[in-house]
Length: 149
Length: 238
Image: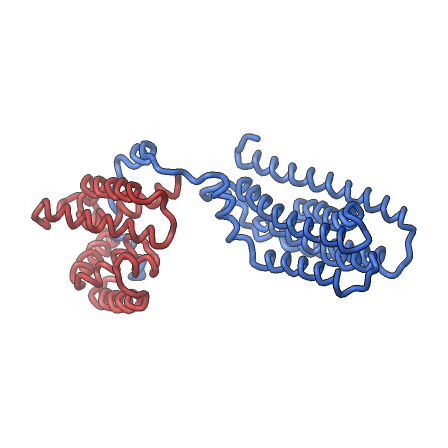
């Protein structure tokens, strides 16, 4: 089922961003699906997608609680120090400097690939708040990355 | 590089190791064919539904408004029904008209499956509208069910056959223009035959029977051709 594979990739990408470990991210992704299908019969667009992300987010929090550390692993693929790699590293560093709420909105929108509606549902805020936080976060990121992009 | 693009590319994780295995082994309810067909309803343009409803309303009001002259009632139906057929034919061929067939074929469902679903939905919709008109005309006018069915199905099937043939042969908006011209021609011919010009009704009945049968045959051939051609093109077994 192509749809499911696509959703799997998005959730995995989001979990990897959260836990920075591919094995743990994949475990959490699979657990997310198992929990989801334990309660819902099928994935529809809209709120169900946001619900998947909410489960994934909570499982990532559980993962850190169990691990009791936020230490990053070196699970990213080895990259050469090309300009592109520098940009990627700069983007990751800049994102880490945002406050948690803005960072989460950016993660859901651009790493998770959620729509504004889905992001609003997953973050438990209004669409307007998503627009506002996203705009402010992007502006801040641009400022942090001046001279890099 | 824009910040949005940079954000999307900066967090590319390693390939997941067990994705395919997990998805294959996971038990989840799959979409049934009827659910798939129903899901396609929202992708049919609103104008199709509006026009179908308008045709039905005009036909119902014609029975009450137009004096009890059977040919005047058929005249109204003959003028409108071809456009219902045109709407259906253009909706079925929409992917070709807008050059989207390759993209749709590469998506989750194959193009023949999508066209099949659209045909089912539009077929049910048109069947409902036409049946309602036939029943209304059959009961409330002196025509009778059989004659009403013949006079209403003839322009519908003729335009269906011609439009599907044209849209299969001529790609793009040109095909739509030719189909519209053919539809207007059939509509005017209906108006001419069933309007004020007195014709020998035996000749009209024979002509309608031949045209209706021809339209049915042409429609069936075209649908079969479109579906089998596409199936072959996209590697789907019949």
